[in-house]
Amino acid sequence: VQLQASGGGLVQPGGSLTLSCAASGISLDAYAIGWFRRAPGKEREGLSCFLPTGQTYSVDSVKGRFTVSRNSADNIVYLQMNNLKSEDTAIYYCAGDHRGCTPEARYWGKGTQVTVSS
Image 1 (cartoon, one colour):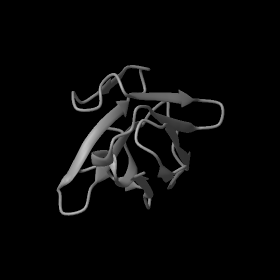
Image 2: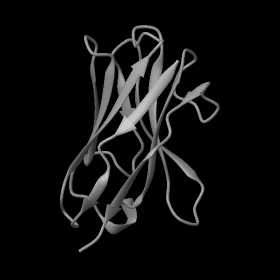
Image 3: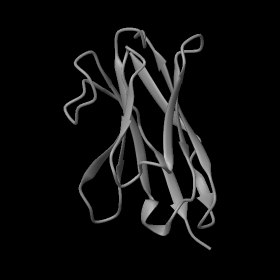
């Protein structure tokens, strides 16, 4: 099983980025994919979740700015991030688990750095 997060980079405040989480070895029809981040000096934070049922949810701090979606054919989950702020600077991770989106997820990607700065 492998989860590969990609798409991070440097973006100006107010800009957008789309992160990808490519899953191999698991089916997104059976596994939830969650997006998490860890900002410098802060605890890991759960952001958004894509459930096998197709339901999605995001935490209040990113709701309206971050959107999670799935490409079932390619087994990829995306995190579209708009109106980025400096406080969104963090390493972003995707994680998969059949139990749902949980910090105790069984499978984790390596993370991709997002830096929001002018």
